[in-house]
Image (tube, rainbow, N blue to C red; front, side, top):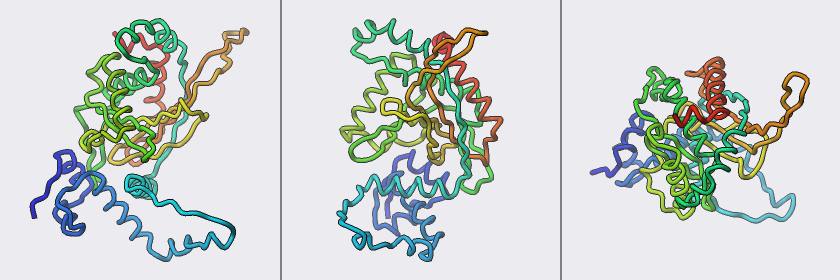
Length: 295
């Protein structure tokens, strides 16, 4: 049986210990993507849990009142399987922090006319991607993956950043390739393009794999913090929520400062609390003084 799979899918399957030939025989499919590998891994976890656990979830909800049913989309099923497996198998910890966003807001306001001339909307997310790319180069342990057997750390010489996009068909995570080599305007244009094509379901499978780390940005919706789930084979994920005004004291003088809440979830098998604290301290410093990103 000749298997059709992209190089990124083959690499992903290898890192997860999945034999694509066996998977093709099991599914009867010759064209495989990363989502098929994730679904297979999710099935392993469900099988390990055993029917003695899930049978307690079988409830006749209609016995308690009127109900209706809505089938999950294929994308939602695959995401549920992958996130369920990740949450069950990875010891995750979330580090909470916040950064002064006033300098970023000032630059966005000052460059608004130039952004419009370029046909772009300069968002804070572009600065966050730049800051994360810089941190991943400075902290290589975060820019790594753990082998499927948990015995080898795979350090990456590239920096690819996933951007979670909420779509009507479910969550999609297109990836910005080589984010560390791109400037602010290029990142802004690419983020807008990926988000628009994700909403239109025009993102290809090869555009959603191979991220070093991902960002889940809820700032446009709300919230004061959350605990995002690590998306393996990544070792960490950064959550961003809505900017809030915080009182900061300069001696005896109170000063209102816009602060963005940040939530870093990480795989504790590889990353320790001190590692996460240092990573986020550097990240917050870069966001608070974005001139260091642009030099």
